Length: 178
Image 1 (cartoon, helix red, strand yellow):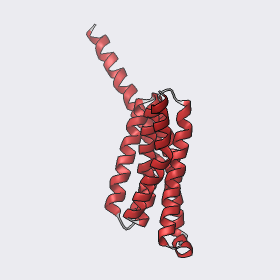
Image 2: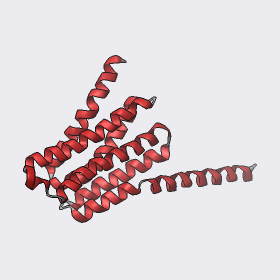
Image 3: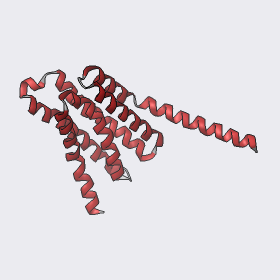
Image 4: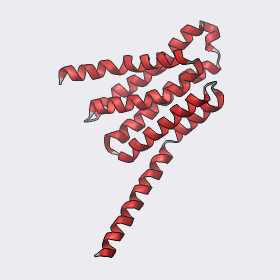
Protein backbone atom coordinates (compact mmCIF):
# COMPACT_ATOMS: atom_id res chain seq x y z
CA UNK A 1 0.00 0.00 0.00
CA UNK A 2 2.87 2.38 0.81
CA UNK A 3 4.52 1.76 -2.55
CA UNK A 4 1.25 2.39 -4.33
CA UNK A 5 0.89 5.79 -2.62
CA UNK A 6 4.48 6.76 -3.42
CA UNK A 7 4.00 5.75 -7.04
CA UNK A 8 0.85 7.87 -7.31
CA UNK A 9 2.72 10.85 -5.83
CA UNK A 10 5.61 10.45 -8.30
CA UNK A 11 3.19 10.15 -11.20
CA UNK A 12 1.33 13.27 -10.12
CA UNK A 13 4.57 15.27 -9.81
CA UNK A 14 5.72 14.11 -13.24
CA UNK A 15 2.33 15.08 -14.70
CA UNK A 16 2.46 18.57 -13.15
CA UNK A 17 6.08 19.06 -14.21
CA UNK A 18 5.10 18.19 -17.78
CA UNK A 19 2.27 20.70 -17.71
CA UNK A 20 4.64 23.39 -16.43
CA UNK A 21 7.24 22.68 -19.10
CA UNK A 22 4.57 22.76 -21.82
CA UNK A 23 3.19 26.04 -20.46
CA UNK A 24 6.64 27.62 -20.32
CA UNK A 25 7.34 26.53 -23.88
CA UNK A 26 4.08 28.15 -25.03
CA UNK A 27 5.08 31.52 -23.56
CA UNK A 28 7.96 32.03 -25.99
CA UNK A 29 6.23 35.04 -27.66
CA UNK A 30 6.12 36.77 -24.26
CA UNK A 31 9.82 36.11 -23.76
CA UNK A 32 10.64 37.50 -27.22
CA UNK A 33 8.55 40.64 -26.64
CA UNK A 34 10.17 41.12 -23.23
CA UNK A 35 13.64 40.75 -24.69
CA UNK A 36 12.95 43.23 -27.49
CA UNK A 37 11.44 45.76 -25.14
CA UNK A 38 14.25 45.35 -22.60
CA UNK A 39 16.99 45.68 -25.20
CA UNK A 40 15.55 48.55 -27.23
CA UNK A 41 13.40 50.59 -24.85
CA UNK A 42 14.59 53.46 -22.67
CA UNK A 43 12.64 52.00 -19.69
CA UNK A 44 14.44 48.67 -19.12
CA UNK A 45 13.24 48.18 -15.54
CA UNK A 46 9.58 48.62 -16.52
CA UNK A 47 10.10 46.40 -19.56
CA UNK A 48 11.51 43.64 -17.39
CA UNK A 49 8.78 44.10 -14.77
CA UNK A 50 5.90 43.97 -17.27
CA UNK A 51 7.57 41.11 -19.13
CA UNK A 52 8.02 38.96 -16.05
CA UNK A 53 4.43 39.65 -15.02
CA UNK A 54 3.27 38.64 -18.49
CA UNK A 55 5.33 35.44 -18.49
CA UNK A 56 4.17 34.54 -14.98
CA UNK A 57 0.49 35.23 -15.65
CA UNK A 58 0.51 33.41 -18.97
CA UNK A 59 2.38 30.41 -17.61
CA UNK A 60 0.08 30.03 -14.62
CA UNK A 61 -3.05 30.35 -16.76
CA UNK A 62 -1.72 27.79 -19.24
CA UNK A 63 -0.94 25.37 -16.39
CA UNK A 64 -4.47 25.62 -15.01
CA UNK A 65 -6.09 24.73 -18.33
CA UNK A 66 -9.79 25.06 -19.18
CA UNK A 67 -10.97 28.61 -19.98
CA UNK A 68 -7.85 30.11 -18.37
CA UNK A 69 -5.72 28.42 -21.00
CA UNK A 70 -7.94 29.77 -23.77
CA UNK A 71 -7.78 33.26 -22.25
CA UNK A 72 -3.98 33.11 -22.03
CA UNK A 73 -3.59 31.99 -25.63
CA UNK A 74 -6.06 34.53 -26.98
CA UNK A 75 -4.64 37.28 -24.79
CA UNK A 76 -1.13 36.52 -25.98
CA UNK A 77 -2.24 36.57 -29.62
CA UNK A 78 -4.08 39.86 -29.17
CA UNK A 79 -1.20 41.20 -27.07
CA UNK A 80 1.28 40.49 -29.85
CA UNK A 81 -0.81 42.75 -32.08
CA UNK A 82 -1.00 45.40 -29.35
CA UNK A 83 2.80 45.13 -28.98
CA UNK A 84 3.71 45.12 -32.67
CA UNK A 85 1.66 48.15 -33.71
CA UNK A 86 3.42 50.70 -31.45
CA UNK A 87 6.77 48.87 -31.70
CA UNK A 88 6.74 49.02 -35.49
CA UNK A 89 5.36 52.56 -35.58
CA UNK A 90 8.07 53.80 -33.23
CA UNK A 91 10.86 52.27 -35.27
CA UNK A 92 9.37 53.54 -38.55
CA UNK A 93 9.28 57.06 -37.04
CA UNK A 94 5.56 57.49 -37.64
CA UNK A 95 5.61 60.31 -35.08
CA UNK A 96 7.52 62.45 -37.59
CA UNK A 97 4.73 62.04 -40.14
CA UNK A 98 1.68 62.75 -38.01
CA UNK A 99 3.11 64.33 -34.86
CA UNK A 100 4.00 62.70 -31.58
CA UNK A 101 0.64 63.06 -29.83
CA UNK A 102 -1.31 61.72 -32.81
CA UNK A 103 1.13 58.83 -33.21
CA UNK A 104 0.78 57.90 -29.55
CA UNK A 105 -3.01 57.90 -29.71
CA UNK A 106 -3.20 56.08 -33.04
CA UNK A 107 -0.55 53.45 -32.40
CA UNK A 108 -0.97 52.72 -28.69
CA UNK A 109 -4.69 53.37 -28.39
CA UNK A 110 -5.41 51.65 -31.70
CA UNK A 111 -3.30 48.62 -30.78
CA UNK A 112 -5.04 48.35 -27.42
CA UNK A 113 -8.45 48.73 -29.02
CA UNK A 114 -7.78 46.02 -31.62
CA UNK A 115 -6.40 43.69 -28.95
CA UNK A 116 -9.43 44.30 -26.74
CA UNK A 117 -11.74 43.78 -29.70
CA UNK A 118 -10.20 40.37 -30.38
CA UNK A 119 -10.68 39.39 -26.74
CA UNK A 120 -14.30 40.60 -26.76
CA UNK A 121 -15.16 38.71 -29.94
CA UNK A 122 -13.52 35.47 -28.83
CA UNK A 123 -15.15 35.64 -25.40
CA UNK A 124 -18.51 34.86 -27.02
CA UNK A 125 -17.36 31.28 -27.62
CA UNK A 126 -16.45 30.53 -23.98
CA UNK A 127 -18.92 29.52 -21.26
CA UNK A 128 -17.24 31.76 -18.62
CA UNK A 129 -17.46 34.84 -20.83
CA UNK A 130 -16.74 37.61 -18.31
CA UNK A 131 -13.90 35.76 -16.58
CA UNK A 132 -12.36 35.04 -19.98
CA UNK A 133 -12.79 38.68 -20.96
CA UNK A 134 -11.05 39.95 -17.82
CA UNK A 135 -8.19 37.43 -17.90
CA UNK A 136 -7.61 37.85 -21.63
CA UNK A 137 -7.68 41.64 -21.35
CA UNK A 138 -5.06 41.51 -18.57
CA UNK A 139 -2.71 39.37 -20.70
CA UNK A 140 -3.32 41.60 -23.73
CA UNK A 141 -2.61 44.72 -21.68
CA UNK A 142 0.61 43.34 -20.22
CA UNK A 143 1.86 42.36 -23.68
CA UNK A 144 0.83 45.67 -25.20
CA UNK A 145 2.56 47.61 -22.43
CA UNK A 146 5.89 46.23 -23.61
CA UNK A 147 5.42 48.04 -26.93
CA UNK A 148 3.86 51.17 -25.50
CA UNK A 149 6.84 51.85 -23.27
CA UNK A 150 8.64 53.21 -26.33
CA UNK A 151 6.27 56.18 -26.20
CA UNK A 152 6.58 56.69 -22.44
CA UNK A 153 3.85 56.96 -19.85
CA UNK A 154 1.39 58.63 -22.21
CA UNK A 155 1.65 55.55 -24.41
CA UNK A 156 0.80 53.33 -21.46
CA UNK A 157 -2.28 55.42 -20.69
CA UNK A 158 -3.57 55.36 -24.25
CA UNK A 159 -3.11 51.57 -24.45
CA UNK A 160 -5.17 51.14 -21.27
CA UNK A 161 -7.86 53.42 -22.67
CA UNK A 162 -7.88 51.44 -25.92
CA UNK A 163 -8.26 48.06 -24.21
CA UNK A 164 -10.97 49.40 -21.87
CA UNK A 165 -12.82 51.05 -24.74
CA UNK A 166 -13.07 47.70 -26.51
CA UNK A 167 -13.74 45.37 -23.56
CA UNK A 168 -15.77 47.40 -21.06
CA UNK A 169 -18.92 47.72 -23.21
CA UNK A 170 -18.93 43.95 -23.75
CA UNK A 171 -18.70 43.25 -20.02
CA UNK A 172 -21.27 45.90 -19.11
CA UNK A 173 -23.72 44.60 -21.72
CA UNK A 174 -23.40 41.06 -20.39
CA UNK A 175 -23.86 42.28 -16.83
CA UNK A 176 -27.01 44.24 -17.73
CA UNK A 177 -28.55 41.39 -19.71
CA UNK A 178 -27.75 38.66 -17.18
